[in-house]
Length: 94
Image (tube, rainbow, N blue to C red; front, side):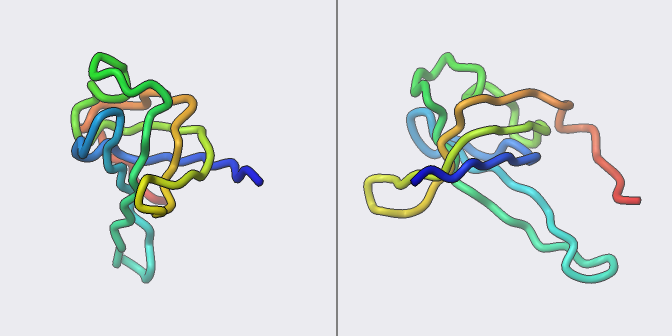
């Protein structure tokens, strides 16, 4: 069974070949936010891939599916990534 995943998130730190954290904030209360982090593995593990060269904080859209790493932890397998804005742009929740 495959599970489709779409994320609007910020690029986080690189943690391995083709693998990095991504982050997004979720409003849990009026004015309070919780930071969520997911491990995302790009389908192409090359260091030169676009996914591995985003500056941490860059706003991205990721389309992919759920998968497992070698330890059996659930991760997101990134099949397509799109750049939305640089790390200096912040979205406002209206």
